[in-house]
Each structure stands twice: as structure tokens, then as C-alpha cells.
Image (cartoon, rainbow, N blue to C red; front, side):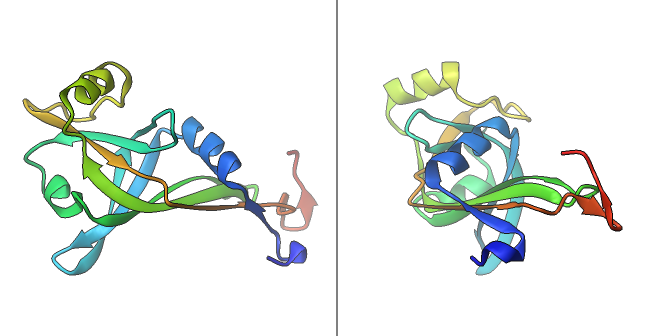
Length: 146
């Protein structure tokens, strides 16, 4: 991008570092042949994969198992005109290995709405892009503190 347009491209590692600090993201998937967006809590695994924990009976699980999805995370301060956004695109799969499921039950995300039968969904980060709004720390012509 043009350095004068107010945005800075973020590298993969910086994107993953920023994502690790955020508690909420948005999964973008296809539901009944239409785009759908759902806010979810998540965590990152050691390899950078996105982990979700949800009910095995959820419509989300049926829609995304084996599908290519997008996952967006951001932190924006509208008053200061600054922030960042990261988008990860990758294939989502259910974690079926019992040992992996047991490990994630201890270390993975905690579901907002616990269910009797929970599953973990892993999104492999195949394409990771991000950008930061820079130089936008003014409001109505007045410099704001960073």
C-alpha cells in the first residue's frame, strides 16, 4: 500500500501476535449459500491455528467442518482514528483425535455457552493479512496522545 494512505501492512508474525491479545473474533462462513458472520471467543494454538470451542450440535459446526472460512480480529479506537485489523483465511476442521481433544480441554478456549457435548474447531492459517491505521491520531485537526 501507499505509505501516504494512512495504513501500514502487517507481517504474518505481527498479525498472530496481535490476534493473541484479542478475546473476540468474527468467523465468516457460508450458511445456506449466503455469507454469515458470527462473533466468537477463540484462542491461538502454538502453531498459530485458531481454536474455537462450541456445541457439537451447533449449526456453526455443521456449516464449517471442512470448509474454507475467514476469521477477522480487530482493535479499533474510533475516537483516535487508530487501530488494526487481521484477517485469516483457512480450512476449518473438527478436532477428532482424543488426545488432542483432551489437551485442548485443558489449554484451549472456554465456551461462552457451555454445552453437554463440546467440540473444538481448528482453523489453519493459510493466508494471514493485516493492516494498522497509522498517522490517524488526530481528531478534528487536534493532535491526540498516542
